[in-house]
Amino acid sequence: MNFTAPPGQPRGIAVGLKLLTSLPCDRCVGRSLNLCRPLDDARLRRLLALGGIRHWKRHETLFRAGDPMTSFFKIRKGIAAVSRALDDGRRQIVAVRAPGDCVGYLDNDGRYAFEGEALTDVEACAFDRRGFDAFAADHPDLAAAVSEALSSALKQTGQAMLVLGQLKSTERVAHFLCEIDALYRDRHIGGTPLVLHMSRGEIGDYLGLTIETVSRSMGKLKKRGLIGLIGSDGVVVLEGAKLREVGKVGAAPASVAAAF
Amino acid sequence: MNFTAPPGQPRGIAVGLKLLTSLPCDRCVGRSLNLCRPLDDARLRRLLALGGIRHWKRHETLFRAGDPMTSFFKIRKGIAAVSRALDDGRRQIVAVRAPGDCVGYLDNDGRYAFEGEALTDVEACAFDRRGFDAFAADHPDLAAAVSEALSSALKQTGQAMLVLGQLKSTERVAHFLCEIDALYRDRHIGGTPLVLHMSRGEIGDYLGLTIETVSRSMGKLKKRGLIGLIGSDGVVVLEGAKLREVGKVGAAPASVAAAF
DNA sequence: CGGGAACTTGATCTCGGTCAATATTGGTGG
DNA sequence: CCACCAATATTGACCGAGATCAAGTTCCCG
Image 1 (tube, rainbow over the protein chains, first blue to last red):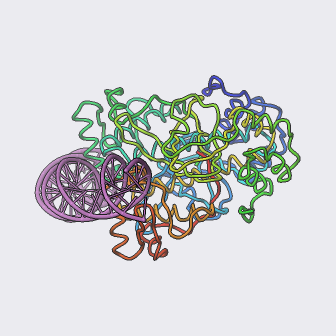
Image 2: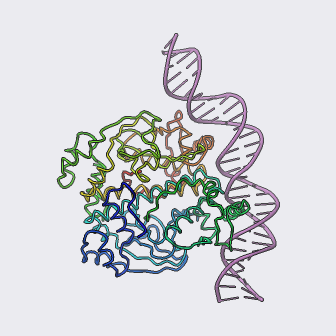
Image 3: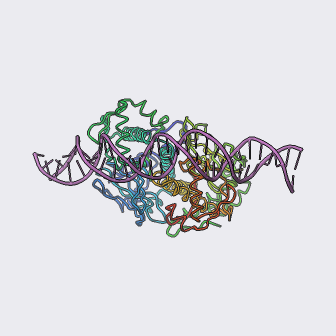
């Protein structure tokens, strides 16, 4: 029971949120039943029909921009990157998604709008997009939850634009570390030390920086005593408050499973 | 009747889209009635109760980040910027919104998540957020339209992240010009020459560049013969295809009124 | 262990930021 | 309608953060 109703939210949205958060991924259809008004079990089963659970290994592609969209994915385990690439090889990671988040939801005219790539081994549940939309149309709670997830994602990308457009390299890296720390903490994955699961190159693609600059910025933060480095993937946050200050991280808004 | 159903979209969404697009802003409640299933007129009136039409002059604030949210705004005339600022004065314009778009929809715990500022004189219709949500909960078409608008905004910000993170200054400016051109064309405002309605500083805050760099980049594009400049606000696109190439603008996706 | 990939570190270069004059411009009042 | 002026834009000179190029070094993983 991780997600409680934010104070002042209409009741329906809170329930719907939980519904999306614990969108049934397995055969555990029954589990979702007690979360809101009695659902149409047959339709739920239909909703799950096309998908079921799938697995990807690190670096494998969940979906490719431009490919016809059939289903979107709700991550159960692992971390995934949503990105967009240019012909010349430049690419921008647009979001990092963790268990509970959905990816592959956005389309242009029935085709995936972004790329999805596994940053670790990933287990996810595929939902037929059409079926889901139809189902959501009949279930206001779920529709509200979708809107809430999209709104959350939009706030995140707005913040990300501020990071990319205004922050210096070291500020960006500090921000990134805070963000990942908060994300993993929120989803109860990892602990201390923080394990990034992202190479310097992937971090660079997320922050609009080169491998070398990411590495140097990490070095600066370490030298300043704000973090410690364990291997290349492990980070110990020694001075969280200062790190957040450097990264211009505002008061943490209550996080919500997001979609992309 | 600008928005037609994208091929392959479920019918409900197309209708809902139109509904949001022509969300009643005036006393013209009746006009929306024929767009979808008969709406509850009393509720619609309640929906409009708190708001009505409001006007802002250029540079005035529509809403401020952190202020308690009461209503969001559907732009009827003029252009508005949605932005986010840092304590130290740096700010990032996160979206430029035109007639038909909604702004001020995103909140953190009942407070506006971004700033809204009028780039020209603006006329907009205010909707009570609570009332709207409640109304949307009972009208699946409208709920779907909200999701569609949010999805559209999310795709746009994803693209914007690519621009901020990967493009060089002149590429960014070229991209910006194409984007504004397409936006104004889509909303049937302006013509030739294109009137930006944004100072170099505002463009800079959108693209993560300084005033001087924006100016120089414009100069380069002019020297290359891709654009002409008329005064400081007017732009003639001379070589649209080349401009789009420089700005790394992919095949234009069908645009949809967006929310932020 | 051994070897290849990823990371760090250093040297240099370049794009865009900063600072500083001009030059336009567009709004205002005569 | 024109002259003036404050705001904005352009242009130039210089500087510095971050990119690029190039070695080393560490870290995995077989």
